[in-house]
Amino acid sequence: MSLTFDKDILDEDEETLLSYGVEEGSRLELSDLNIQARNFGAVGLRFVNVSNSTDLKRRDWSKDAPRWRRTRCGLCLEGQCTNSKCDAYKHTVIMPMGYTKFDILVDPSDTKTVCPLCKNYVQPTNCGFNNCWWKFYGKKQNEGNDKTPPQNCSSDWNQVDDAYHYFDQLKSGMVIWRQLVVEAVKKKPVQ
Image 1 (cartoon, rainbow, N blue to C red):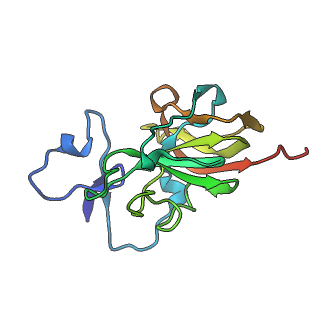
Image 2: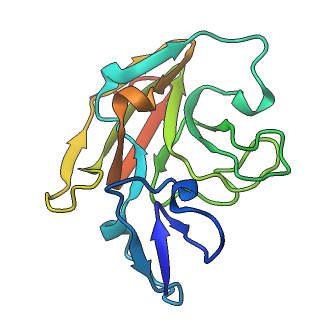
Image 3: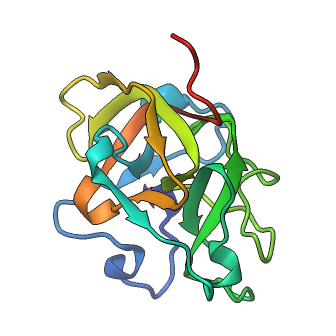
C-alpha cells in the first residue's frame, strides 16, 4: 500500500509533502500497487478544461521556438518532460498528433505521447490546435468535488487558423475527466 497524490507515489524519503505539490485541502489516496486492473472510468484524469472554446489563446508562429515546442497541423498535446537528462526537462513540450481522434484517457502511450527530444513518455495535460476543425466530447468533474456526478459535455466543430491555439490553464482551469475524446480534421465534416 502506498500514498498517492495526483498519480504520484509519495515515497518514504526526506521530501516534504509540499515538494510533491500537496497543498492545504489536497486529497491523498491510499493505493494498492499490487492490483493490476484499474478502473479508469472511476478514476479519471486531470486535464485542462476544454469545455469553453472561448478560453483558447492564439499564438503566432515564432522563428526561435525551442525544438520541444514545434507543432504541425491538427491536434497537439502538451505535457511536461520529466527526464532530468533531457534539454526539455521540466518544460512544457508539444506532441503533434495531427488530424486524428484521440481518447485522452486511453490513447496516451510510450510511442504516441513522448517528448520530441528524448522520446520518454509524457503525460498530456493540455491540448492545442493548428489549421483545423476540432471538437470534443466527454464527462468532466470539477477537481476536489467527488460528491457531484460527472457532467456530460461536448462541442460543435470549431475552426482555428494558421497559428497555434491552446488552452490557458490558468484561465480554463483543470478538471478531472472521466472521459475525454478530442478530434481534429482538416475540413469541416458535412453534418
